[in-house]
Length: 278
Image (tube, rainbow, N blue to C red; front, side, top):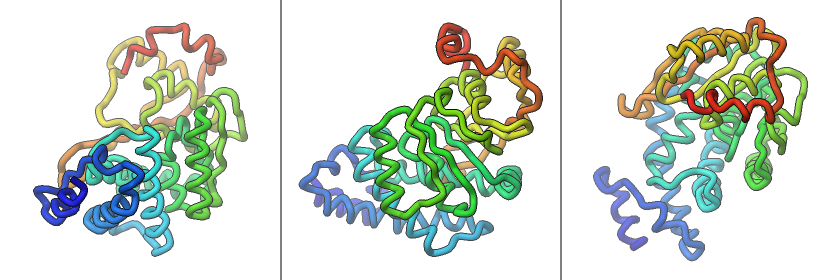
């Protein structure tokens, strides 16, 4: 079976590789080979999309090591979902950094110094972003110890010095407020926005990775976003590859929230309506 897959990756048509068939321990050396081939096929395409963004060789090397670690370990442990390598690359590596091709996002990263990724999971998007911005400080906040341990291994592997790992719930660890909060595949929108208030500076920005717009036209949602103190600056869209799957990122700015927010997690989880919107 593995030899068949190795033969298929030589053609575009047969490039979709079954991860399930490749992740057994006895096949680790062959997995590494397939990861290498996948990187060689996809990275030049992504790099071309990022042509206006400086990309030193050291950053490319670190991204490649992180990519291999994702496939060999994060996938095995269930931190990211199964798919073929091609899709995984664009869904995770590319989707973390393609927003940097958008002018409003570039401006935010240019002007900001501190960032926090809430519910960072396997380090997405915080690790790729920290690799590309070594002069910035990133907090990676994740409640699951196994995922934090994985990120610690990544830090050691690529000598990532500008990420501070926080193994706790978002509301349990309060640091100095940051300029920008990131979240991707976190909780429902209204829940996520409220939790950002534990970390965000006044006039700070929120970058919300989301493939489709959520129900902000719902009157309850509109009122709650306003009460939380946020205003939506804009929603930007980008395609993952060749104008294929369209993704989006929403930019919020924190103005003046009501004094009743943020609430404790105990109170938040009792409000069922905010878990149904989005």
